[in-house]
Image 1 (cartoon, helix red, strand yellow):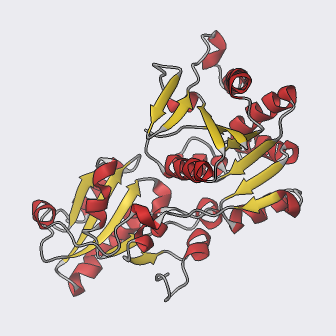
Image 2 (cartoon, one colour):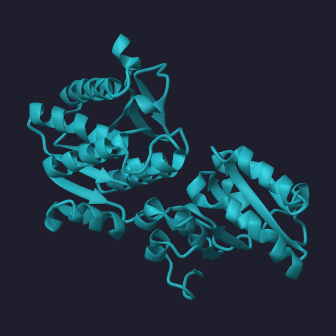
Length: 344
């Protein structure tokens, strides 16, 4: 089996999207399948048309020089056109049996166009509804024009793709609700390789000391600081928690759009002594920070995005034998059985 994967972005960028992709590719290769991979324009500036990362070769896509590239809406069609041409070019070199396009819908549209021209089947993998993420990021309004257009484009991809995979039941039910036959959809849930993590490994004494966490009970959040993650809600709870547990500390590892808001909330609540902002850390040192945490907290806010989509991070914590506390939203309920493998 020869598969050409069409991706929004990939390693060496760090995100749940890139880590899921890497694991899919490694497992497919372990099964003896031949995989090749191309990223779209969201990968960022291209210095080379191909790049080797962690033993995986990625073809990159260079943006076309066109005055239309800055025109809203039209520029999205330029993205599809550029990527479709790149897929055709790579397919003629790599001779895939199948095209596997991953969210967002623009990748699916490009794959469908190339697939029909090359007479190749297309699998589309839906990892989230990007219009819902755009609402949270403040770049779109719920059920506004851009939201509806994005939704309609992805529904078109669902109808035209030869098969669909998705990461959870919440997304599967939503896709079925759009009139897509159930038999066309396969759920391939988020997962982690336990070999990548150390189970209940001891914390590094020097690192504990450098962060002022020696002898403390450490709550932790490791991930991206998006609004839907609900970190300010956790910060608001800290003064009450500290009244009962003065030695409690909160370790936040990562970064993102909520950085400045989180820093301001820490100052406003007088939590400078109780919250450690470690920032973004190199991927190879993340395990060291996981080992510092006694209880991982995932306070996602209740909204359409978090009710439909399952996160990856709680699984990483579970794989290391860490305690997990999470908000009672739909995505968490798919992963966590209250009182068994975590607390909701």
